[in-house]
Image (cartoon, rainbow, N blue to C red; front, side, top):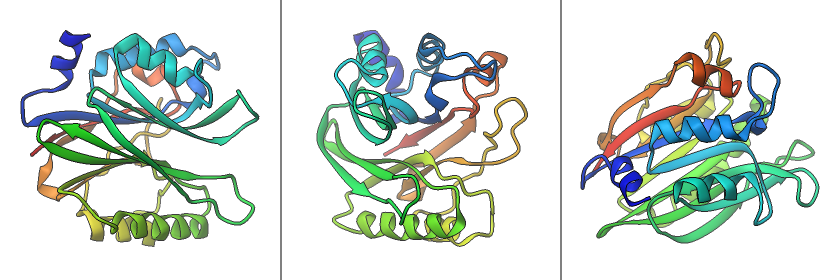
Length: 238
């Protein structure tokens, strides 16, 4: 595990981060395979990973299995499902998790949504990581981004990372404009559908913007088959 941690921390001042909607571990072949998801995560070797549509809600859930396999700390927020059969957002981190907060983004009678906010220790520095999955309707996303940015402005530390499936395909839509205004423009990489990606639904933003060094979607045949979304990986530098 120590060697995996060193690989994930690309240098003393660089960090590899990723976001991925794993679609409840259901691949493009229609089969559910957490082992396939775990294999891809092992190849990504990110120190910080935001996951959406992942089984969570118990000590024996999918998040816990992935964390145990690769030596991650973890935190999760269930958003849909019955007790012990929930799906939601999760954070895997090689860095110690010092504090976790949940911000409710649920809108009217739509599917419940939330932001998982965690504060991580990176040597002498502190990172604020936010993991989310926004709704399918435009009005819903406008409400959610407005609330998300309200929580972002409270006691912002030096570096904040937003990881998530934003579900915003309108490049000129207000939610994306608001996020770019707050974080700075982040490159749009196509992630959905995984087998022939057309839409940049999965995003990574970093504040301050200049800390974002590189960002890309991962396109190998194996990774295209693990979920209906491609993972997005970025490097940040303090």
